[in-house]
Structures are given as C-alpha cells and as structure tokens.
Amino acid sequence: MQPTDLFLLRLTRYFALPLALIACACGSSSTSPTTTTSGPTSSLNISLKDSPFADAKAVLVTFSVVSAHLSGADFITLPFAGGASSRTCDLKKLVTAQDVLGVGPLPVGHYTQLRLVVSGASIYFDSATSGSACASTISPPAGSSAAVDIPSGELKLNREFDLTSTTSTNILLDFDGDQSIKATGNGKYTMTPVIAVVSVSSASSGR
Image 1: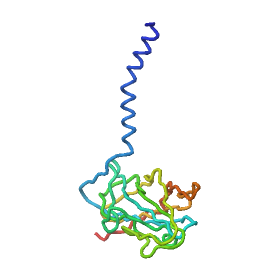
Image 2: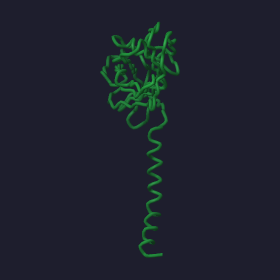
Image 3: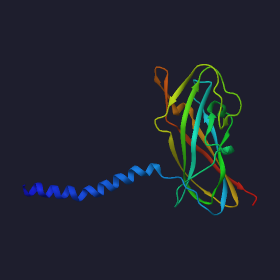
Image 4: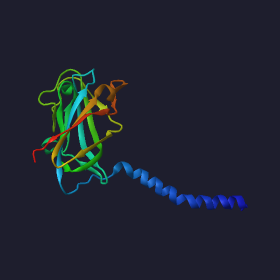
C-alpha cells in the first residue's frame, strides 16, 4: 500500500463516526416527542379563518395535531375544541367567519413556534356542507369530489408569544386555500398547507 493510500484510509476512519452521529441527530429533529409540564397555566385559544380555494363549494381539511413550542422545553399539545382527537374544518365557511381550532390550558412561559399537522383534505364541487364550520367530524356533501394528496402536512409557524398566569391569549390563523391547493392534472389535486399568523392578542383572565 502506498503512503498516500494509507493516509486516506486513516482519514476516512477518523471522520466516519462523527458523520454518522451528525446524520442521526438531523434525522430525529422533526420527530421530537410532544411533552407536558407541570406548574402554573394560562389559557390559549387558536382560531382559524380562510382565504378560500375558489373552484369548490366545500373544502374539508382535517387537523390531527396543534401544538406550541415552550422555550427551553418541547412542543406541548393544545387540545382540540371539545376534547376530540382531531378537528375538521370546511374552509369555504371560514371566508367571512372564524372558528376555534384548539383551546386549553398551557404552562406559562415564552413560546417560539406553533406546529400544525394536516392529516387529510377533500374538495367538493357541487354542494356545500351543513352545520358548523369546524367540528370533530363533518359529513361530506353530495355530488362530485376529489381527494387531495398531502406530501407533507406538518407546518411550523415561527411566531413568538408569552403566556402569563393573569392573561388569556388568542391567536388567529389564516389558511390560504388558493395558495395551498394546486391542480396536478387528470382531476387530481395536491396540498402544501400555507398558513399565516394573523394576530396574537391577550386579555385579562380575571384571576
């Protein structure tokens, strides 16, 4: 073996372990466990409105996770309204109104991000839905429809806010249907959720 070949072999062995460790750390960053903490809590209410997908009478989107990142800790799950395991919203009904997505007590502290996971979506072209804009389940309307493929439904919103024991906080989100849903041809659609934080406001909790 030539001296140059021996040097390259040793160099490869030297860097192999650090590179493997870096790869493992990067792979686990998007799957951090959701945790809870004890101590004083504050009320957080997240509401949703929509800039709609125009070519439909109803757009049903199901959310499976709504959580907030507590600085120095982890993402903490915010319960869906009514304590359901998921929440479905008809975006067409949220054009001039808004509805509650998640609500509940969270530990007081400084928060850096919101995380939402969209687990399903469907478009309906002939009829509107009946009942509330958001619920644990919404009956699909009659007529033609199309399923929407969601390559990645996880979305993190970088917006900092503070929760205190003396105030309740309200966050309004805007789900942009036209920007989120794209036709891919042959009657098929895909969704990359585009959601923006419209406002963050606090009010006295009366404690």
